[in-house]
Length: 239
View 1 (cartoon, rainbow, N blue to C red):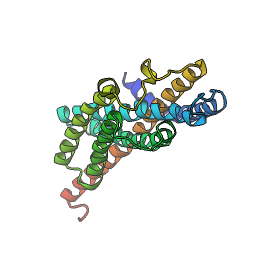
View 2: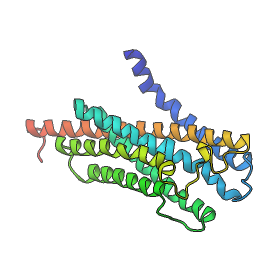
View 3: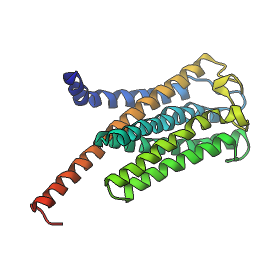
View 4: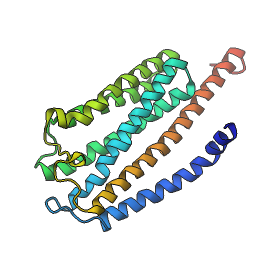
């Protein structure tokens, strides 16, 4: 098992980034050159194949990674868990911003305006702001245990809003359609279904890739801070 973990760490990234790149390019090609245009909205509807995966396989998955990393850090105090939680929050903010940019571009065609205080939009915005607060907190405060614990608590609490976002349309209605849940027209052409599946797979791999890169960077930063602290205590370097 130890050897398997070493092999994954050594060669996994080298395989993950080209696969992710090829799949993203292939998804873009398939969506714009193979998937037919929707009859009512035309080409603007193709935002759907990136907007929804960015939310589910990007924002939701990144937030879930942040939740588990934060919970494990609070339980065990693991620096690795803290680095993973921090990376998950950053991915959640990045993909969440993709959703918040692509959504209004789609909404102005579908609804006639860029923004409404729709239940799902409002709860999504609230969740995004929570993870923005997490990222800002970690970027502009020290890396001490107190700051890490406070951020970890925020990462755990932030996940509580995710199921509310998902079921907001069902519970409170609003302008958002339920395309993936049987209402709002659905994916009428089989190629549309393939397009959205490719979108989900692409953003899942992209989330994994970004989390991998950022968590390793944060672990390296934490190790450097620890070495600097030990050097200061030993008098090797001066503050």
